[in-house]
Amino acid sequence: MYLLKDLLRYSRLFYFYKHTMSLFQTASIIEKMSSRADKTVKLVVSTQELKPEEATELFKLINKPGYFLFKENAVMFEDLPLEDAKIDDNEKSVSQRLRAVLFVWHKQQTEKGKRKDTFNTFYREYMETKIDKIKETLE
Image 1: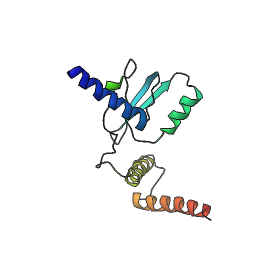
Image 2 (image 1 turned 180 degrees about the horizontal axis):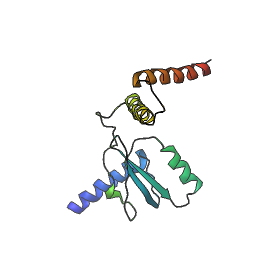
Image 3 (image 1 turned 135 degrees about the vertical axis):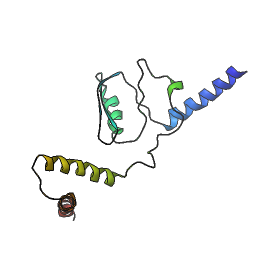
Image 4 (image 1 turned 90 degrees about the vertical axis):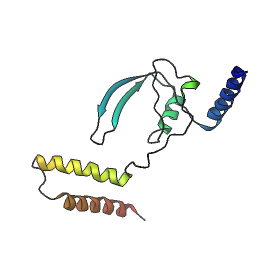
């Protein structure tokens, strides 16, 4: 009886995944892993040669939040999470992340003697430059 219930549950979940979620799976190798200042981890993953349609699907996933699954063998259905990937509510906004990265960059440049201004002065000038460049492209 339990086996039938499990089978029905998995068949419904499989239908759900197959029809509502995109899933990309290919043989790959984690080549490099490094930690970053913001406590995230950067992974460099290489795939085997991809067919054009596989490469297209992979490129569609760039900059989209999701789950990264890695297993030495093919990922099976029961390995998949049941919930959607979510961005943590405590995560910094994109503008906060940009400001933090610019702060670290400014600090490094100051330590090397390449900058002498304060961060707030640098930040305002940098952002004004970017804003002006974008305004120039507006019609």
